[in-house]
Structure formats: C-alpha cells, structure tokens
Length: 86
Image (cartoon, rainbow, N blue to C red):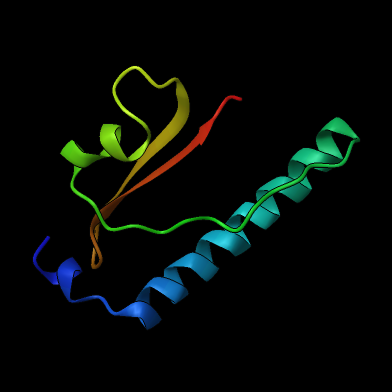
C-alpha cells in the first residue's frame, strides 16, 4: 500500500474517470434491461486499507451493497464498489 500513498490528485482523477466511464456503461446497460431511466452520480475514489472500509461507509451497522474485486497480473490490486440502499 506504500505505493498507493504516493498517488496525487491527477492519479485520483484518472481513477475517478475510469470509474465514471464504467459506471456509465453499467447504468446504460441496466437502463436498457429495465427499460427505465437510471440515475447515477460521479463515483468517489479513496485509497484506504481494507480495515477502514466499514468506518468509511458509515460504521459496521450501516447496510450497504458492495462488490469486492481483486485484480492480478502486472497491476495487482483491489477495488471495492459500494452503494447505500436508501
């Protein structure tokens, strides 16, 4: 995680844009599937340890929907996508 601490605002903007593009494609596909409008917000990008996730999302008792994705290969890492259900 040491390398991740060296990310600057430009790097976070790039990650945010990649997330935004992916979420846009997913929203379009879901909209087509459900035949109704889907609204989305620009994703928030944060670098955090796995232990910090519960606190970032509002505490251990907060109910959220999440997807954890581990990447391997030349650029290994983890991505955690979450949204509240409210």
